[in-house]
Length: 75
Image (cartoon, rainbow, N blue to C red):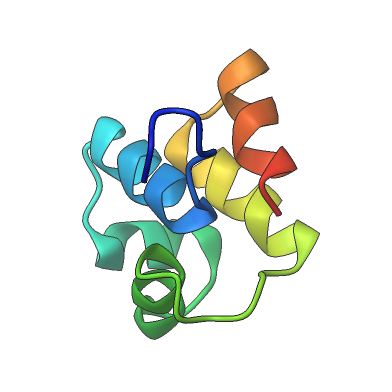
């Protein structure tokens, strides 16, 4: 993506997961979603997730403040 293009939800999710030191399996377990869902979302092949799923993933990744706001606004 270009510099001015906003990052996709999948890219933000993958970055948050990696920053938290989590595997896809660990994020899935902590956020009560399937590994397939995490994988599909990270690859931007899944439909837009529900806001509650996004909140669970943000919580599981330890996102807070502006970082969390950016994560949640992409949905």
